[in-house]
Length: 301
Image 1: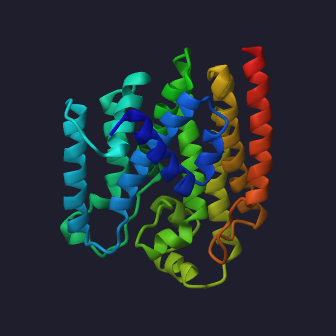
Image 2 (image 1 turned 120 degrees about the horizontal axis):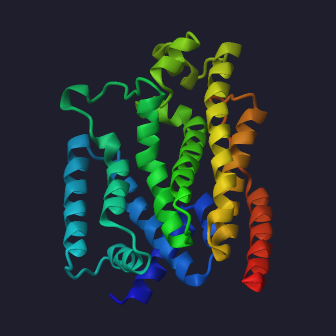
């Protein structure tokens, strides 16, 4: 398979699945947009394997191991007719993305499969925010570190800011998806946060099953939202450090995710009775502003 066809297939995956991310891809120069689509398709493939509930945890581990083995062979210089592997390998070469970063991307998507056999069927939890931060780092911050390699930057301080921007995005995802995650046996709300607000795991399950939220439970989620809000400050500092031709893409992504966090606050953090989202017309407005910003930046450049 040639590289151009591989990128086209990755773009179709991103267009179909990426939702918020794809809006930001569209305001990048073509070669950077292609690269982002390739990285997204790579993550999507790993996520789909990890989340395939038609298979047991053990079966998913076996499929993942086979997929990772095939990717390792491509990294070592082997040929492949897998469009995702072909495009990602080209992206890695073009933008000097290390094997370590891509390995961490895979590690992040496989974390939910790293459950000891004796714990299968139990609720997956995190003891405190430090544990949750490590999870968020692997599933989101590493994505940010890969993205800025594609966007371009020269100030090394951008790396920590990209890490923290990823934390902001993932905490926003966690708040939006609390109900769905509980239904999958995953509680990403740290146990020490639950204890602080007097909320048990049993109560979280009850909320996911339709119980009405109490004020202290809304306050608990507001506390986590406040942490996310703090990390969005890092995104604002990161923006001017990114190469001018990519700033609009980062702006679009941050604007959509930050809007989602604000909308969660707008329903007083009741993420159990409804799934909060940013409506498509609002996303298109952000995209239009991003395209205008990108056009201006191209003229200035």
